[in-house]
Image: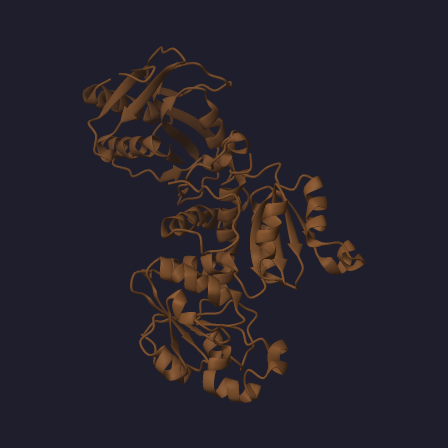
Length: 307
Length: 174
């Protein structure tokens, strides 16, 4: 089994075996991240460019750290301080970066399909770090890694994804990844936040949190995107929080020992109660730690196909 | 080399390690995956039989330290490095099955030194087949087997469900 993809644009085209290979590769890098000297020479001489058209701290820092721990040169490029505000197109920006011999471009962009477009226009490998409402593949992979690390088997695992699924690339990537490895995925939230035809992705819809949480092994809370409040998806934040916020009381509906996950940044007291976010069940900070190892694994696997 | 010869070579190497290091003080064995790990466990078992001391054992995956990563089309599958003790100021015996170009050992030494600063690194190999491309020499050798560069030397282990033996393949055939 070897990894034959040049880009990582979405979870959808990956096989279950390829997903497992990425997770196993990340194991080696988890070990590296635990060392006193957290660096290996595997990507010496390679250049990784983080091209971020949307604000991001966690994902960008995680990719930067991953590249640096592999001894690659990492540079960050964000539109606010670049020529993009002067009217340059995505492809022209990328071609300029490529002309500086970038081997891997990590792209975050507000438009769905941006990473795919970019991958057709440049010779570098492209990693999608979030494109609009489409996918965020590395987030799903680090979520799966965290579940596996906590000794949960994927086959038959019951996972509830709670919140604004329609506007969540994290949810989409996770539904693809989890169903491929054999988990049973529920999506929970108001109808206004569910994309049309969500069942076709293999997820089951629940419109009440109490029913959706019953007997689940993993709860993935999505961030309530407060900036979308103007879209009338729900009447008030307080009502949303009352109906769909995860509290210690509701957590008891899930299986004992259920994992609570969140891609961050969390809105304390909105989608998740502070005592739940900080509880023993919460693996939110493990997700962040594992993010670096998983991204190192992906950078490593893609760096081979470049020639 | 058959199973008997392998066993006798390992017994001798275990004695040589103890003689050179005057016992097991500060001693640790680190095997290079995959063959070296099997040999490491066998050597530590012999050392325990002789000295009644369990020496610390580590497993090293050298893939990330290879010098051909940048020129390969597909990245090799990674296995994990597991060295569950502090290597600082220890005498480390690196263990591998076949010593050939020396490039694996170079990578292993770099990988080891990233984990700490050992007092000394020694090298034990089951077979030395010659053709070094780097100035590297084994401290303990099971058997010197002169080969030509187009031959392949392969060590089989009981642990992998094979009969213990060393086979030399002549351009693809034994």
